[in-house]
Image (tube, rainbow, N blue to C red):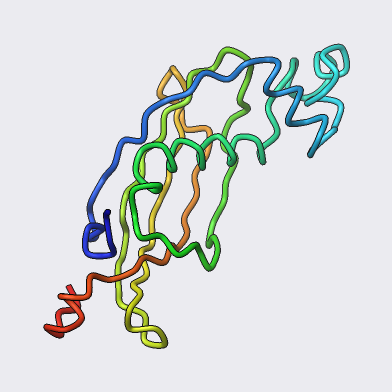
Length: 155
């Protein structure tokens, strides 16, 4: 299991890729974001986007899945206190191949819970043309290793 100590500032993790299907865009949008440019191809063709696009929230969910599969499910993660920044930079379309990169920006022990550490990360999602489609910055909480705490190590 990866713990807080495994996420020093500067660490970069390539989180793999996923291909976006038309069906996945429609399914997600029908449930959670039924705006016309996400659920109706004809209406989407007349929108600013000129065609069907994924919901930004669907794009976030795909990034989260890539994180989970690449590293998060093998960590001592205790959740997240939230995001500081979220930007949808380009539309995501059916057939796009998205890849995620995570960069650790900061890491520090939690003062209020000494068995936990905070990690600030920047997640960037790119399409098959290497164009950034999503940028997120936020924090995660991870358990610290008992031996590090017992020895008084903070990093």
